[in-house]
Image (tube, rainbow, N blue to C red; front, side, top):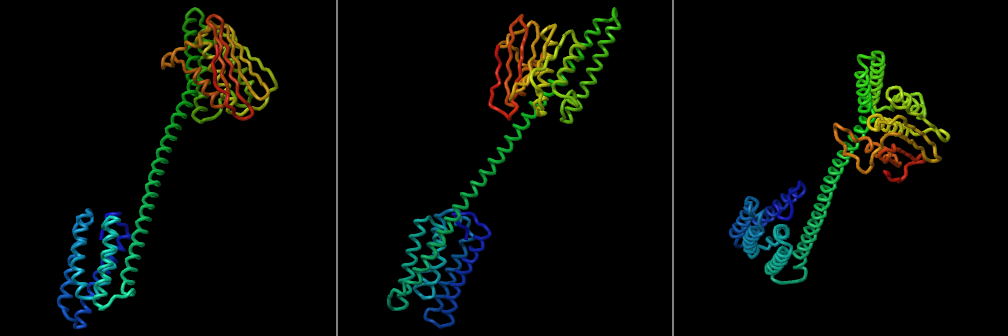
Length: 406
């Protein structure tokens, strides 16, 4: 019999069939004993047992019984009425009360089911005592004990089922939460990787293309009056393209910048100043202060990229004649300072990043130093040049904020 309390599982389906077989078996026992014992009213006993069995069998075939407690109550009342008739005819019908207990407890509400069990128990005790011709405490033990066992079993099962359902819902919520968390982590990872790629493209390929563009413009201006000067600019542009290609290949392979191959950060910055001075109308000078010490690869890459981006901005926007790049080892910090004598700008009125005009350099620098727990300071006044300082901690990461001052 399906229950309204819970959906059938393989275990409950097996118990349901066992309950069907028990009910039919007990009804058949009452009929067979009446026929075999040649008891009075044997025909009526058999008829009552068969009728009770048919009404009982109709319950599982009626969908409304498993869906509505009212329909279940009507069906149980019909089964109970025929059972009472059978109980008045045969003492063997008292045992049918045991499966009826389970039906009442499963199909009715807790209060109604308990009331039905008590009523069935009282009827079973009175009926059995009437057939015995006397009442004694032992007469009530069997039906009462059976009712107590049925109540304990059904209520215990329902309690376990509710706990199981609660755990199932918690597991579903946990699974959904883990799926949402995984999706959020994936999205965050995609965004972080996109930001990293944007920084790398800006500080390598974009700056390289800008340098090539400036060199080709210089070559165009030199033609046709000074072809040797134009050829020099074209050669510089070709070398910049070669360097850019090397950066692109290293970028795809996720390796360190080529400028750091077989050299130190100081050497790479000195070479950057020399290359910038040779390719553009800017005298870039390198200075080293403090005692050099080994740096993590991430620190070297970040400081080199910041210096590259700062010098590229100086060449493109500042119209400066000189720029000084200083690498400083300051105890537990390392810093790179870039100072130029260009026309400067107002740090508080920077244009928003835009695909054609750029504007991604400073945000990329801030992101780099923030990722490594460092600080970024920017000072610039219109007409008085620009100074930028990036400082990174050497002894682990710290909680320094990224700042911009003017």
